[in-house]
Length: 346
Image (cartoon, rainbow, N blue to C red; front, side, top):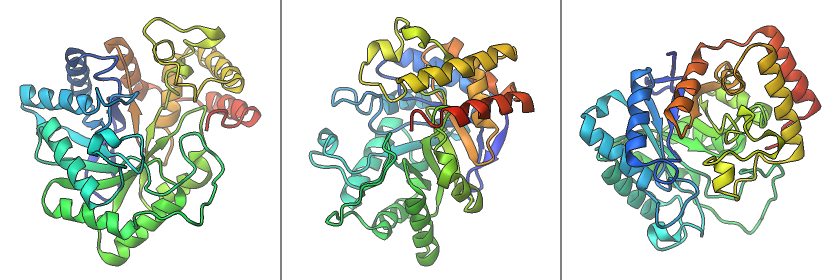
């Protein structure tokens, strides 16, 4: 396993990060524990979760993923071996069931969220506490164009950082990070932290895959120059890049078969691009999923690649992408597809 620096935190995290959002919905507690065992044995020291997981979110299941991790810590007595990341939900009226009101990135919400997460995770501290999405309106979750609303008000960057500083001083959080953030938001958080001696954002968790390379446009430079690397999520585009959905296939038990709401990576351009990526992989003697993950692993702005799996076989293969190094010919072929069909699933 390869390890990389998490911003300026001093922590070294595995390039493969274990994603957890299926636990409590598609995966049982026992299956979650088995995945964590395998990941740790394979050198993965970085786990990522969120207070709202599993996905798709619901009032009945919210927090269940963190609970599964907590029972694993309690059973294995190995909390110190894991760099644990979780998230507080951003502004939304869809998560009223979490705190009885619209969720915001203010003191009341963040304080309540961290206490709930610590209890479920059965730990005294979080290594990386992330803002799941901004308090302000931004172009994320598949939206490319930014639509400005001059009447909008949002929690100031300094206020949110002040709450996070209180958590750091209390020992409940070691470091902080962002998710679904933009170049503007990332730089503003970094600027506020530097000017006012507040916690520095160490990472940005945004989508990045062969079907969505929009991170390269503005955020890649931010990650490299500001030392605030990408924690890439959906690197397989919810499994699409494995090729298993080509031709309209929906394997039993797969996310697309179980949850019709997941359409972000389902369109004609995505199918065309995926078919070409799968062919590139097979012509090179590579597993399509491992090729897609290896592409993410090799990017200079990536700190860690968040993989998810519903079976141990998938998990083993995903972790194995660390051993795959893409040749110049394969990378040229990949870029050829990208030039023809750019970012079909932003």
